Length: 217
Image (cartoon, rainbow, N blue to C red; front, side, top):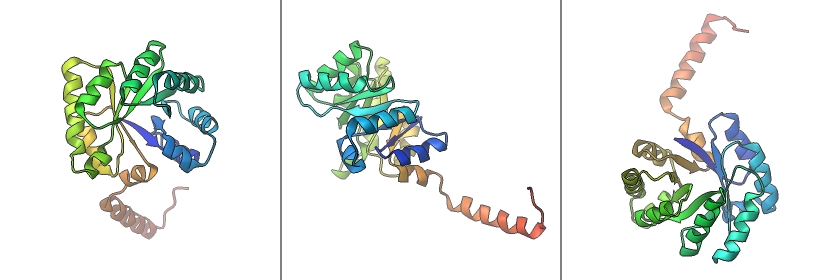
């Protein structure tokens, strides 16, 4: 499963990239606001920092304007994936951009039917929001499983990009189901490394090594 970082903070991206685990980045208007930087400036910097797809989201609601925004975003770098909402206008734009050979990430997916529509429109990525789904009393992982089954039934190429990830269990369950990508904030990536037995084992090794009086360097 590919790991994307959900952020517009370049320092967080560099931290994640240094681990060798980062496959791409997703951004949205809220993350751009949080970063406090000009949109094209930060997207350009991110696209240079990572080799994989970088999602840049359109903000228009109508197809004509969304298409203009998408084409402008795609010119930033070859690894830009234009992000559009899962609306009728968004899927019109998805189909048109894909015809131009541009990667498209269809976002704000909350049902398997919506995911089916996105795949038929040729989306490169579909972004179901599992955390927000959980927040309103639904099971986000059941949504991922339904999408996986549907896509496998018809051999759709659209990649399932699990979004709104809140904790490591979301990543574990997504991997079990067979999602293609998970995107998550830096704090979730840090938590993936943690286990109490790893910490206690390392402490024991440190104690025993100190007792030997040896040095590797």
